[in-house]
Image 1 (cartoon, helix red, strand yellow):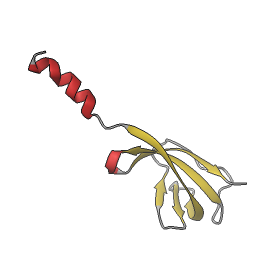
Image 2 (cartoon, helix red, strand yellow):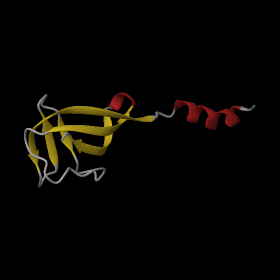
Image 3 (cartoon, one colour):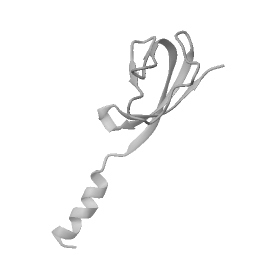
Image 4 (cartoon, rainbow, N blue to C red):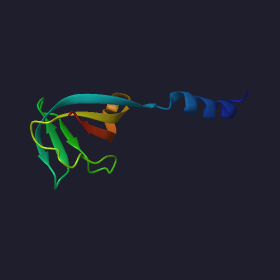
Length: 86
């Protein structure tokens, strides 16, 4: 195989996979206008990328699970879904 023939193969092998992950916690604050959720551990989750919407009745004190897309070591890409514990 020529060097030029190896370039597409190497590009495919070095592509960073996007994986789904999740985090759960209690909502410390929720700004419905700015679409920002702050969990009890002070992590800030922005919904402005359009990947997911918050449950309509979400408020501080609720426990939520946020499913998000991880992008290798760069953190998260976008939020895929939010569920509120009953």
